[in-house]
Length: 631
Image (cartoon, rainbow, N blue to C red; front, side, top):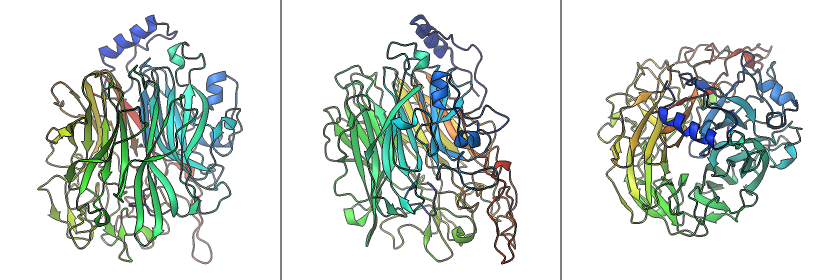
């Protein structure tokens, strides 16, 4: 949600359901599910965030569970706000694939209809529930948000006005766990708390209740690590979360594992980041003290947790090039636990790569990881959201023989480097005089390899879907019962594509609809992937300036996919509902010629300044989470 490396400003994740899932559903119905499988296939794309007066709105989890009506100002606003959502997560119930739960950074409760701020500070975590295999979702928020006075609010032991970076995982007993990074001082100061917490949902009927109720009732959340509450991301700040649960049926079954990057800032060396880890052996009621996994490396992010069929726990992450750590290149590394997450090995480096990390120079000459208008304007004149190479990994918990990890990452493709001709660049190198910015562009792709985590041996990384044009970003992977599934963002439909420029940016600095979600499937037996399939039914423009007072784009830092056997479901951030407009503050109009501006309403004051946007419900902020069954 907020990455010090890329962060600027104050803002914090087609197809029919296969016959196999029908068989799964039939089997669990025989096991006692009261609700039969919905025979109708899901629509090509399903909207998870129903924050529109023409849709179903937002419902309190208390009402979902008890049937007793409850609402508040936040839920009322969320039911009509047409607000912003990004960084989606999703998880399919392994006991009943009809039950799918999603989440995101949900800003639906930030603004009142007249543009004034209301209860939620900046963002809260959504809870989007489907009981028909993803054909439709009921939208809600995880309890504990400011303004929540439902009976469930007291179960949320959090201390902040905002929560995001959602990550989700099921156990095999009907419980769903939701991890979060949590910031914002309820008193309105500049403090960024940087806590991390885990919330738990259970089946109202208990473990033996009908599985259609799995993960439905919120039973509490617990802070697993506190930040130092320093202003503006200084001090100790936790971010970049990951969660997994042991579903192996072995001695570690039911253990909940949660990891994150801890940032410390404000010193002469800038930000340092390390990976920390906790576990719960009592179904999320309590967690161990945080354990530092990374050792002497100073710049590590994006942990991902994988549990193999023998109950071993592996945490992978991106290791950034850093001279303080004698680490000249970016690399993928991991730590190993063979005792149910009680202790870990030293870090093991797997391989190095050339990252794809878009950067530019702002008007002051400082390195910027995102570009927009006014204080966030960059010298190139391009408009783009932040993002950089990530590492995602998983394991097949049904494989009881091998400690195999299945890994995706999205670096620059070697040989595609080209001079950008501007201050924009995507290549970084610790060996060059300017680590972050070299005036060189490149093409990014999704690479895959299998790692034998017990020995450190891995297959040769290969592109899942080689394409002559387009950037591929933000991959995620899920593996179960020998079936692999992947999702990623792809700009092959960008009419202005060039490796010299950011996604959706034309040579004249205007922006266009350019981004789609794609997916593919494969087999762990052959390690081969199917042809890719476009998941989105509408290509959208990720460069709409919807954040920091309508001055810069932001799409979050990840997409998400979940699978049970051959059935998989993926979710992504989407801009198809955004209403484009003009920004009256831009006089004269800037380089993007209003193609990145969103609809807004402002009056000019006598001193020449402008009011805040007075019509945030009119569609200019309508960023949503969509999902689909995937190959």
